[in-house]
Length: 425
Ligand code: GKR
Ligand code: MG
Image (cartoon, rainbow, N blue to C red; front, top):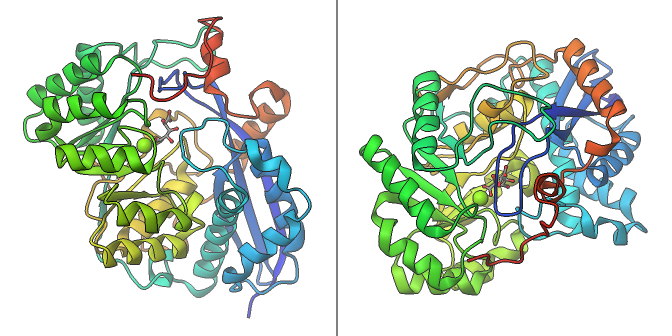
């Protein structure tokens, strides 16, 4: 039995384009946490999760508690992390400053941290046994995992010119179609999700119509992060419902979602009103969501994602996959878990094409809009230590970017900007 001799937590800042959403705009750098777990066999496993200060604090405490434990004791990680947190419960109210991922509570914070340690443990266990992570999860049911091209309204550059890229602006239907075309040309995506909630619904309806015209038959999704009232959601469903494979969080809250469903019959997906196990019963009973977007980070890891999948399957609810700004370790974990869940029948989301940096030696490349599922031991990716050191150095020198704050970033351009209360429209 392998024992953990050391766990290391490294905070990093990765560059991020000025992507717009209902709350504001992404900052030029966004925090992530990289976890390494070393065993007495001389093996190191790696994991990745959110990097905002509250996550980092819990991750550091959990890392300190790990040496001496059995590598396979992954089911005990949540209890261990909870124990390290006791007494600090007030602090975590603020743990999701972006406010785009639903409930904020201790459980979700702990699960988000635990996920990186579970993934690192599985990576180490896979390297120890010579088995890929998907085998440790019962074996893949597909060799390739489809991803959707994740389109964003965006500015050409950040106000201070930091973290530049060559994508240009996308602020109208033509810009969105141009962006989708580049995604299709470069990565072969055959479905698209547009992050909405940025402009009035009518403008976003026009963008969806333009996408449908430019890419006939492609599955499309629109996600305003709960930015619309029930009335606005019904209007959007009437206008473009038949062009969308699902509407993602058109409105905030289970009751609003249930009403939109009742009035339109539209397929509704969420990564906002069902993000913890406690939220499942009410939402399913009210028929508020027909597709849950899993996310192994905040659901608590790869095994927890399978538990969610079983619940959804039991209640006839579909499963898709949510993403947030992330790098290749998370993408590898997402791909392994997506490969083992038979009824994950939608293309997964990934922000990864927006990131120009990575902490793995061979960053993934989407081909035909998909990634091959690796059969190499563990996750099948290697840590690039030079890159990790450089991104950590940035974290050290930029304390102003250590917590994601889309509202503050927007205020740099629009000084009067305050966090919009939802619904915006
Ligand atoms: O990156 O701006 C963003 C997204 O809005 C992200 O924060 C969301 O959590 O991608 C997410 C979503 O699907 O809601
Ligand atoms: Mg969403």
